[in-house]
Length: 552
Image (cartoon, rainbow, N blue to C red; front, side, top):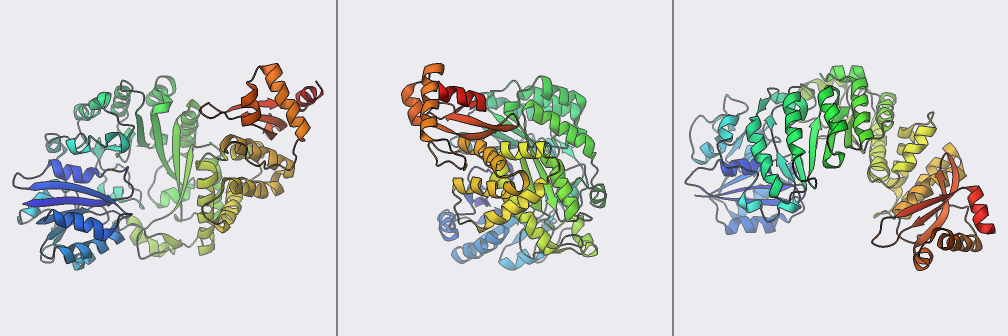
C-alpha cells in the first residue's frame, strides 16, 4: 500500500516533525514516502509529483499558515486522483473540523496521530480522535504513550534528511503539552505536560557532535517547566560543538536562580536563543486571559540574559482584553526599555479550540473569518488603533529587529526618557507604508531622521541616525547628514590616518567614509573604514581632535 505523507511548510528551512513521527510509526504493509513542499510552490505541479507516486492514501498536516491553500490543494489532488483516500490532521483541524469533511477527504484525525493515523489507514473501528461523515470519536483529542514513541526509530536522524541537514532547522521536542492555561493559546487545550525521558532526550542530542546542524529549535511550550531537568540538558548541550545554536521557549519569570547562574557564568551566549512570550505587562489583562506572570521578575531575568549577550526574542500581543491603546503603548515601551534582541509585535488571533473564542463576544471582539483569524476590533481597541499597531509592527521589524537602527533607537530613548518609543514607531511605520517596495536603505534612515527631528532636533537626529547608517551601508554611500565636511577637511583627515595611525593609504582613500555621528552624548566626527573582506572599523574624532588634525 503506497502512502504519501505531505504538507506545505512556510519555508524550505522548516521541517515537519509531525510527519516524521508518522513515518517512524508506520505499519509494515505500508510503502511510505514523505514529500514536503512550501506554501509558495505551485499546487498543480506538486500535485502532479504526488500523482506520479500513485498513492492509495495521502496524509496531510494542516496548520494555520497553510489551511486555506490546503483546501485548494485537496481539490486538485482529488481531481487528479479521484480514488485516493485523504486523511488530514494537525492543530488547525483538531478543534473545529466538520467543514473539512466537505472538501472530499475521508477523515480528520484530531490530536496525536502516531497510532490513530495508521489505524485509519487500516480502516479500523473506534479510532480515538477520528471524525468522518459516519463517525465522531467520543475521544476529542488522541494522545500517545511517549514511552512507546521512544522505542521507535528516531525521527530526528532519518537517512532522508542527511543531505539537507546543514540547511534546515532540526526541531526537537522533550515534552508535549503545556502547564499553563492562557485563554488565547491552543496549548491550553492540552495542559497536562508529558515528558520524554531525559535519557532519550540526551540520546537524540548526542549525534549533534558529528552532524553539521546549525540550528536546533526545541518545540517544548515551556523548556524550563522542570528546572533541574532543563538545567541538566543545557549542561549537556555545552559539551556539543559551539557552532550549533539552540532555541528555547521559556517562561522567564520562572527561570530558577540555579539556571540563571549557569547561563550567566558558565554557558556560551553565542549558542542560545530565548523565545520569551510576554504578551502584555497589564496585570488585569493577564488575569483575564488566565496568565500568571511576575512582570518585575520577567524583566529582571530578561535584562540579565541580555546583559550577558544572549539573543532574547520578546512577544507582545495587541487585542487582549482590558488593553487599550495607552496600556499597549506602556507594555511596548516597557519591553523596548530592556533592549531586547527582537521585539515581536502581533495582533491577537482567535484560534479555534481556545477558551478565548467563547469569551470574545463579551469583550466586543470582532475577527476575520478566514485564517489567521486576526482580531479587527475590541471593546478597548478600535480598528484605527489596530491599524496603528500594524504600523508599529512594521517599523519595529524594519528599524529595530533588522539591526539597522538599533543603536540609534536604543540610545535615543535611554537618554530621552520622556519620549515614547511606541509613538515614534507608529509615525515611522505609517511613513514606511507609503514608501514603494522594495525599500531603499537610504530611505529608511532618512525617514528616521524625519520622525526624530521634532523630538531631539535636526542636528542630533542626523548625527544619531548617521552613526548607524555608516556602519550598515555599502561603501561610499551618499551621506545623510546636512552638516558635511569640506573636501579639504576630509583630505586632511585621511592624510592623518595614514601618517599618524599607519593606515594603508590606498584603503584609506578607497574605503573610508567621514561624517558626523553621535558619541559620548554629543556630535563628533566618525571615520568608518570598510575594507572588503575585513571587519568594519570606526574611529571617533572629537571637535578638538578634528581641529588638530586639520591644522597639522
